Structure formats: C-alpha cells, structure tokens
Image 1 (cartoon, one colour):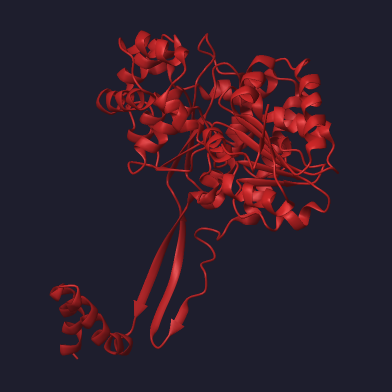
Image 2 (spheres, one colour):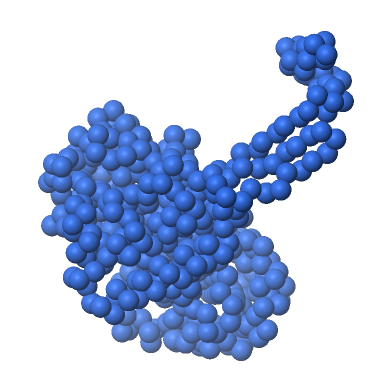
Length: 454
C-alpha cells in the first residue's frame, strides 16, 4: 500500500491513475490478456476490439457464436440444447448444499425483498400518483415494469449466489414478468449448486450456462435459445462492463459495476484491524480492485500497514489481494476532516465506510457514493450479503451520476396528459407561437384546427 498526501506534487496524477483503472487497462491490458486474445482471435486485440468482435459475431450468428466463444474462451464444449439449465436441477439444488448456507441465502433473499419493497417508488398497476389538475388539464405519471430482465452473474472460478439475489430480487419486486440469468459454469460445464439454490430461493427458474461478452451480446440481441432482455443488469469483469456499454441502446443497462472498490474514511478513533480487514475485503476480488484509506492520521496509517501485513499472511487468496493493494491500494493523508469529505465526493467510490467519531454527521455530507456504511459495526460485507440493499453498485467514479441497482431500476415512467376543450383553447396561442418560432407550422396547426371546429 502506497502512502499519498494531498499536498504532494504528483498527488492528482497518482489519484487519477488509481481511480481511472478501466482506462488504464484499455490502454495497456495485462500480458496474460494479450496472450489470450492471440490464442482466441489469432492476433492481439485491445479489450474494446475483443468486445466489438464478439458482439458482432453473436448478433449475426446467435447460438453458434455463443457456443464458439464458450469453447474458445472458456474451454466448454456444448450444444445449444445444453445452454439452458434444466429446472429440475434448480429445484434439487437446495438439497445439495449445506443447510446453514441455504438458510443464509433465504435470509438474504427475504432481507433484499423487504428493503426493495420499502423503497419501491410506486406499485405498478395499482396506485398511480394523484393527477395534477389545473384549469382543465390533468397530468399524471404511470409506472410499469419492463417486460424482461437479464441478470448477469460472474462465474467460472467462484460461485456468486449473492449477485444472483441482488440482481433478481429487485426485478421480481418491481413486477418484471420474465427474469432470467446468464452465468459462466464451472470447468466441467455444471453450475455451482449454491448459485442454483439462490435462484430457487428467489423464484427464478430460467438460467443459461454462458458468461463473458457473449452472454451480454446474447441477452442484448437474443438467440434461438437465449431470450432478448429489455434490461441487462449485474456486475462483471472489465470486458463485461465494456460489453454492457457497447450494447446500451439495444437494451437498457443498470450501471458500470466492476471492478470492485472501497474507500474508508477514518480517524484516530478507528480500529486499525477493522480498517485493514475492510480494505482487504475488496482487494481480494482481484488485481483490478481498489482499496483506499482516507484519513488525517499518520499514526493510523502506520497501524493499518502493520495490520495489512498481519492479515495478508493468513489470507487464502493472498496473491490477488497483494496485487490489488500494490497496484491500486493507497492511504491518503489529508490536511483536515473537510478535505477527507471533499476527497470522498471527488472519488465517488462504490463502497464508502465511515470509521470516525460521530460518523453520522459526516455521512450527511457525502454526495457521491454507491453505498455508505456507517460506524464500526457496519462493515461493507453486510451490504454484499445480508442487509437488503443491492450490492450491484456504480464503480470508477460513476456514483457521481449512477445509483445502485434497486426495484426502481426496473420501472418505466410514462407521462399521461389529458386536456379538455377550454384548456386547449387557453394554451393554443402559446403552442402556436413556440411551434412557429421553431419552424414547425404543422405543430401549430394541429392545435389551431381544433379551435376552428368549435
């Protein structure tokens, strides 16, 4: 973990390197990535070139392209009929995992459902907002869920039942009629039973064994086997995020959710062991993850450094966490608590923890963050797994304008307008004046012709 001070000459440049991780990977992808693109495509390609090539191929060839990239990129030899997981496997999955794990999954599902119902803006098809009425004009908003949602779940090396819960439950609470999942299977082509058990607990019965860019493309355009989604949601790797960006407009997307990141705001009152543990909770996601400590206390930084070394020594996936901390981990020493807050809002992190005395007073000043975790007894993993707020959150500074995934993300809002005769007569001169100023004579006549009929 490097140590930076806000007064350093190169501070802005170094902070930009950490926070613009996606751009850095696009400019200079790791050697392993370059080697893999040569193996798959026969030549080195940039990440965006990889994304565009696969998307174009899947759009033209459908299942055939999906299966081709499943074989080339993931070593999976399948037929189109193998893509969909049989419902019987999903129904049997709870009995194949530890009962305590399934109980935890069910608790997570219930908590997410409860929270999402609580924050749902308007219950679709039931309670519309009261109309705004003025002088013969009635206007209101109509909320309806989208028809189909595709939930992308990272997979392959590790199962992520929590991501299935966090993507599927908000969609179901919103009233989406068809919710399906795409996720990379394990090396033998089977799906991890914990992921299937999570689907069962959520009430999702449609899962496809496909991951990566080809999964995003298949959901965006549809194939003979995989349905077309109105909206694609879920976290993923850097290239998955690029793929979501590329298909936006053919389908809606939620946000850019990955690679993971955390920013811990802390002062001398913080427990250094807590700070280090929480930073490592995100660093272990892999080399592209970021973990930052922002503080005014050099003493705390020294203690956290020692704790990081101590805790890393026994971490099972130590290599990934160490690489992340080396590349994108840092302690930033600010000159005041106000500067700490300003930095947090400037960075706009995915996860922001406040481990300071009287943390709630600082939380009210945070404008940009995917999720805020307040106080020493609210570590970030409560949000990942059990609290009820979705862990599909904006990363790479996009919390400046994106919100985390919620049931409201799956609602469409339509404005509904109704005029009576006198209201139109009152507004026709204004309509005609603006229309003619813009050169649209037919617009003006559309309102005026109704006055001539009176």
